[in-house]
Amino acid sequence: MITKFTRRAALSAFVAAGVLAGGAASVLAADKVQLRMATSGSETDQRSVAMRDVFAPMVADFVEFVPSYNGTVFAQGTELDAISRGNLEMSIASAQELAQFFPEFSIFTAGYVHQDAAHQVAVFNDPLMDPFKKKAEEELGVKLLSVMYLGRRQVNLRQSKDELTVKTPADLAGVNIRMPGTDAWQFLGKALGASPTPMAFAEVYTALSAGAVDGQDNPLPTVVDAKFYEVTSQIVLTSHLVDLNYIAINAEVFNSLPAEQQAKLQEAADAAAESGRQAQLKKEADLVSFLEEQGMQIYEPDLDAFRNQVQTMYLESEFAATWPEGVLEKINALGN
Ligand code: KDO
Image (cartoon, rainbow, N blue to C red; front, side):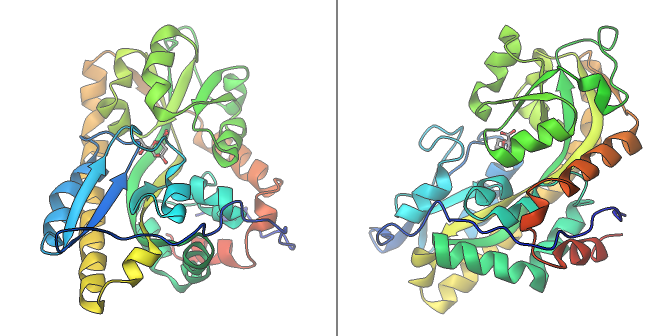
């Protein structure tokens, strides 16, 4: 239970970097609405699998679902802007990306706030989310349909445990960890005690293999799916962020559909999120032994030391000043 955070009084003013730029066009193929979905995840990532195998079939009578993977059509971090401009209908969006437009979303990017997958769902469905969802829809043209579970992010390093054993954040001093390229992610890397380097997900395997970075952070299923275990030696189980993504859709396209189809889309998104969540949780539980068989060294650090440092740094950061009054307390109250 997180008790250390308290809310900063003032909200900082911000200028939304993205606004609705022109009308969003719903692209019609025959009598179906075409929903192009871009993700930086792979085709075998459980979120992608859930969208293809659960979401798409449930709406197949009126939707032509056109996914693209690995950031090939839209690079990681450009998807929300593309939706806002009407160049894309769907993405698997992160809170860190939303925080680029609306800094208060950084509350969902802070380390050691969400406790587990069920807590994420409770938070997303609670009225506390309504102003966040409203702002994304009204000011960016992006409707957040459902919350997907990515998993507990762990620190994954090239060095062997003999070369570097990580017990506390101090042990990560000077360690060059790749984090995705937004302020919220970079800050998380610093809060862990490391020296973060911004880099798109698609480049991480090559950078690890070439030794351009010392490590990266992601949940175990991603370490396996992206084969990072081939080019790293150890995983420090910091569980510093119980990470999520949102199933995001172009609000204008969604609102242009008949109520019955909107309800079906919502139902399909919720079903995909639930199926992906269960698959990801199972993988997370099963993969330690697989990774150990691949020669990875996996261990827990001093979790209190990491939690204390990360929470203290967020509390003192400019991010916390943007968190609306009382929201952190409400999030905490929805947990264990
Ligand atoms: C990553 O770049 O490390 C990250 O895990 C960040 C997530 O928000 C999400 O974008 C994810 O990558 C991609 O979907 C690839 O798994």
